[in-house]
Length: 447
Ligand code: PA5
Image (cartoon, rainbow, N blue to C red; front, side, top):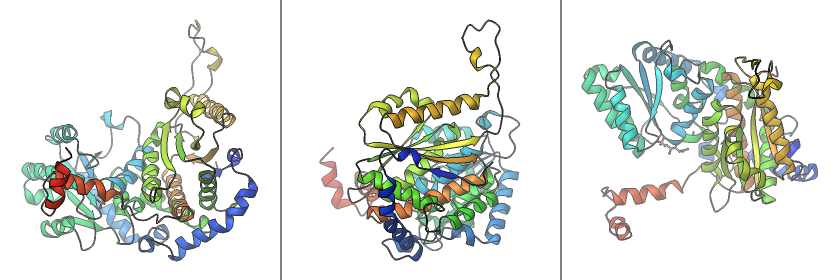
């Protein structure tokens, strides 16, 4: 088994030549220096660049000790957060978990659930109804400490927990992850005496998976956060080199910018392993919020194959040729399942008897790649040796570093998200939040 994830861009050659890639290399290296030296827009948010190699063992030990309390004393732990304060943990936990963990009675440790990533009333009602007779804990993640969705979920679940256990006992099972000084959540954590962790000012939400925001829920779910950080630290080294041959982040950023400039405006993240669905959601958020600004940016989309070959497959094969694909290809599974022989062979499937399910899956992947390339869809591939903490850590850092480089090549500030404020302003005006009186009348006139 390879010791690292591998990026292959050979099948993008239908749209990007080696000469084009060579020509853009100085620009890519310069964008990488801008990230590393903090000389570009958003330089206040580069704390993630050296995070894996500088994460303090004492912080890891503190997270593991906190996770142990929640694991030992809770049947369910709800991680509350949205965007970057949700997707990293969700992606890693889904990628590493048994697909049916939620239904197993012999499941070790607490069930991990998520809230605050939506404002669904039924979702929250049903969650509270489920938690009503459970011993549960809460991890509340919000860098700003003021985001509406997690704040609503936290108010509801905190009230439920305090009603069930009393204020003091409830506080033992609430952990807050937020800014060191600012925001309502910091005030609450200090006043109520919650165990808390800090998100450093210089790490933005979508780059925070290797801080307690991602690591604590992952540790509570029972996964090895040291191996995750070690994988990221390995990629931190590799992704600081200045050649396409050694640095996959540099190559990925360069290829996707060449593709964008040639009219490929949509990138589809493809997986052939359902455990990677939320990894693609994390990637979509990372790239969408980082690059989609100033009326520029590749639109990040995702499909789960082979499921979506029976829906989006038609569009990808045959629709408008403005797309390219990046496939997350997992080399080895954790389990073997052999397709059995059937004497009657009524389904005509005996040609597959004796083969592993994963061989069929790989042939679906290769067959699709060839069909899509023949159909004019450039194909990038990231080979992942196996879904383990180490390789997920590598993948996370690889995509983060490439995102910073790619954003600067695109000519945007990859570390802000000014567009996210617009819906909030309208929502607050519609809900009569104090301070929004002026906007309120104008927006209500448009109802
Ligand atoms: O990447 C980002 O900055 C955002 O997606 C945030 O993570 C998200 O809006 C949640 O913000 P907060 O952690 O402040 O509640």
